[in-house]
Length: 347
Image (tube, rainbow, N blue to C red; front, side, top):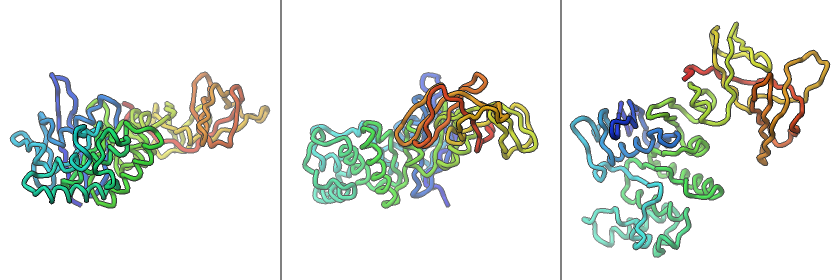
């Protein structure tokens, strides 16, 4: 399949400080693609380069066969055919909903056509009944839908979302995220999402780019980047993990709580990533000949699951269980590793 968007080796500096360095990726038609990373990693700058709000120092950006950005070309943002939903939604406080949505439509269109198009867009996002409301009379979720409708009204080939759910409270965030994703997939709109929220990226996107210090650490499906992180940074950024240095011999790795089969050639000083849910925890039974046990030093109840911190040979490890497995701080327990991933790059 031919990419809709191709970003090739783009670089951007501000005041001689590298912000984005040699970033490349493709986005395919109808795909929801996420740029994930901590604050200051370059993800929003990358989004602004795609939108045309910033000019790249080097590299190219293409929409299909059309060059949007290279050393000699910089297509202005308003001519790129790209929609953008800002983090703060950027609604005009003195305009009602229908006028906010119609604002981005060409003035060459008649007033009636602009109104009809705006209403159709509001209908698509389910808030046509609010067309006469002012922004300050809308909830956060409703304001977001207005901003989305405004972008969709121009029928963009690509939609860019900059932290679109960050201002919503936790309950509304998940509900809105699910509804917006369903809407975008039904409309077959290609999306690039920027977020610092790991859960949001993993649940919303079909592929994820993990960025760090202006560069790409890993690209893959949510399952790939979570279950098979290539670097220590990716393993730790995408959730709690236990990083263990070990030697691998004959397809087995020794851990502080037992031997574990791994898919890796023999090597010394390998790093393993073991997710907390991939370690089984059991009550330690003395006099069984098993001296590999630890003691619970902390317990965190989360409703649907529990996270324990267990100290083994002076080092802490995290274990996650379902809500039915109850242990107390101070309990002696035995840990059994179920699954581990060998980190390819130790950086």
